[in-house]
Each structure stands twice: as structure tokens, then as C-alpha cells.
Image (tube, rainbow, N blue to C red; front, side, top):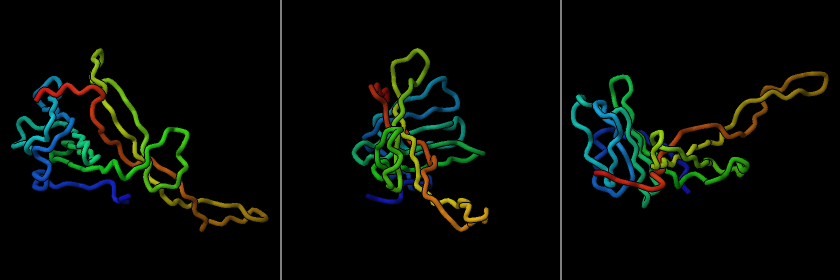
Length: 163
């Protein structure tokens, strides 16, 4: 199992994904709703219109790609969903470096298209205070705990790809 789950992608590296089978969407700044795709499209050209957000799930690779337009630039990431152990809410104690909890919700109010997402939790070491005899504190103690790390798109429950 890989221990690297989250990777920033440069625009010029996007080409390696173009044409691959996926479930995904791009929400353009001049559109009322997202456009759906069944293959990863070419990198968006120009900034008018721009992609407000987008996400693609490559099932064969268990990989989630995310695009966000923030502060005038694109932020693009790849998230290796296969590097996280799937658990339910009561199981966040396995000791794996990453865990994922599944979530679903409707893409738009009143619509049937259900979006599937994973909430990824990362096991991290944190400082903690331990009280010893006579209330002396030991601040060198550590504890391992899961902390929220990243959200990842995992496709649609009933894909209706339009592109």
C-alpha cells in the first residue's frame, strides 16, 4: 500500500490523464450547472470562461483528480484512494496511515444524481500533556490520532455522462 496519497499536479502534467475513462465534471464560470464527462478532457485553455471547480474519478486507478480555481490560479491535485483503508465511522482505530469514510449527497436539489465522496483521515503524532505525581507535567509525551486530511470525489452513484 502506498503511503503517499495527495499529490499536487502542474498544468503541464495534466496531459497524462487526458482521454482516460472516468466519471467527472467541470463547472465553468459561465454555466448554471456542471458538465459531466466520461473521459478526462484536455486542460482548460484561457481564463474566460474559467473552471470554478472540477473533479474526476478514474476507477481503474482508484484515483481522484480535483481542480479548483483559487486566487487567480488553478490548484490541481491527485488523490490515491487506494492508499486509504475504507472504514465506517466507528472504526477509526486501525492504525493505517490513512483511512477513508464514504459520503453521498445529491448533486443538485431535487435531482437524482448522487455524488460519492470520501473523507480522508491521516494518522498523525501530536504532543499531549501528561500529569505525573504531584501535578508535574510531562510535555514530551505524544499520542497518535486521526485528523481530517482531504476530501476526494469518487464518482456518481448513477452516472449520466453528457460529454
